[in-house]
Amino acid sequence: MKQYLKVSVPSTRKEKGPSKSNFWVKKKPINVSADELKELNGFITNGVFRLNPDDDNNRLLLQVHYYLANNNEVKAREILRTLGLTARKIKAYIDDEKSLQRRRPEESGFINYNNQPMPVEYRVRGN
Image (cartoon, rainbow, N blue to C red; front, side, top):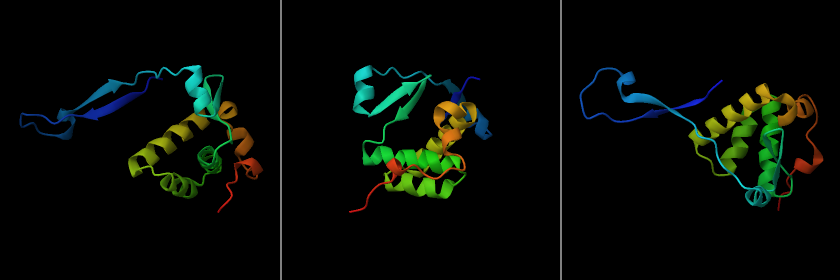
């Protein structure tokens, strides 16, 4: 299934209806080198980028993945808000992660997270 990005462009002419100013743009794949993956503390398994729980930000993102696998979007949104994401970016991140968990449950960790306790290495210590 191909995914497309909807872009809204203001029109100079007076046209009726919202569909007159919208058109579809294809998403292009991102080229990432092995060095950039090492900087992000992650690895790729079967085409899915996975995070290592080495950094506090990575642990918080892994907690988001855990909460989304257990259908707790409220807690996931709170964590993403603390990381400084805007409302649109939070919605896009949650939608992408949920669709990944539906399409590839084994690679995304859905099978390991669903109805299981949170792994101890994902917990972040407070100051």
